[in-house]
Length: 591
Image 1 (cartoon, rainbow, N blue to C red):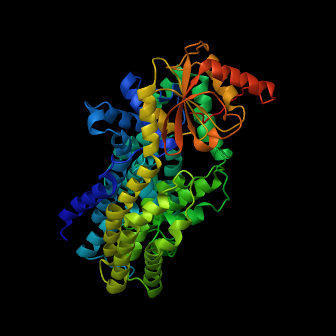
Image 2: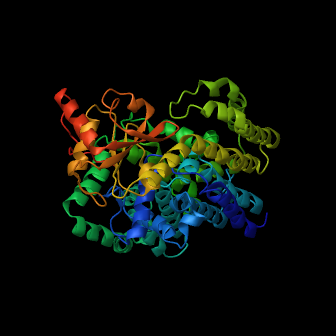
Image 3: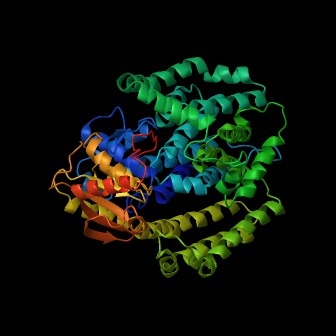
């Protein structure tokens, strides 16, 4: 394939995998609706400084992803061409990944890395390696999930990945790297100081391994560069601290950064080795190639390499920097591994560029076979799925035939692995089969899941909007779904299944004040709309509450509860000895 076709092909694959059908499904609870609602509120109110959701400031992430989403929400006619509101929310994540695919491919296309024999690869080998690196990154299970979700992880990965690749390109002789420092500032605006920390660990480790820390610093000029990064990132932090004061400083820096690293947040406690299996799963089904790439990098020894031939060593430092930093962090989530996936894509592609041994070919084929057989045998294990929120999922999965379609795609990948073996393009053929799986099976499966899980919630939200009287508050109790706030576009009072939930709800209606909600007395004509799930409705502290049933969709019912009836009900529960209202106790993740 001529070199001029490489980037268009990568772009086409990226758009098909990540942008096609992006707005055809609703938001998945619980975090994406918080991002989307905050961004939409920015567009509607014109307050672009502090993200706000459900009437409260949202300090957990910097504003860049909200700004990008908000720009799409501000486009004319957005509700007509994006009726679910998900295209606008997901587009920054999808385009960030597509852009990083192009940077990966262009880097390997311009700087082909040597074969095991020390020879330069042929032109066709360089082309194939460039494409396979982009696809190895894109087809990581973690990237496939988070690049079509309305959160900031893919944006951070796209920006930080571009920064680190531009740093290496500068080291390899591609001129000044001011653009990398600008993008690093944007990465800090995407998810905070972690971008600078990961870049610093990567560059320091690589500099020591190369025995050229001074030369690396001379090329990158870190002090002027960090000045550029600070000029891009710090103004927003300064303004936010000035306007919001201590609550912003304590929440963003104290809770969402320092405490996440030093303590366990939201019960995300995991063993120290948590990211080792995540490393393996995140590269499926090409995990053997990733391990081979790491092993090859380790075998290069400690001697310096020519700068333009050191990309494999650099990618290993990048991956290990993410592994080290988040292993040391007390709070661990699978999404924290995503910044390492571009490095994994480079290592996988460079391992495939060498003449693979039988164990490498065989183990990769075995993984493809396991996936193909497991999907083909779906009728054996799908009926065992027992999810109360998705009671019809097993039957609909089997009836759709999508799992068998997925099995065929993995079967084709297996066939390519067996027939091509060590020939050029053996990995690319498997990747194209997997890309077909994403478009032909995975995306429709997501649509099926959305229809079963989220469509009832959208319908109950529509029923609440249609039934709501002027000034009538809305609450959700039991199973808590932030997407209810997103789809109704009004403040929702959330209370869980705790026994004093009715007391909290009644007290909050009487006393709580936030944007778009004011305390109101329980007058004779006052009422509150309550969305409640079936299980919660059967609990003793909710069962028997006087109400008017308005609608039922899936697990959820919509009640209209007279305020005076709720007030009497809460008083009765209090007299029975239930705990007093505790809604004012600090709950950092409260919607």
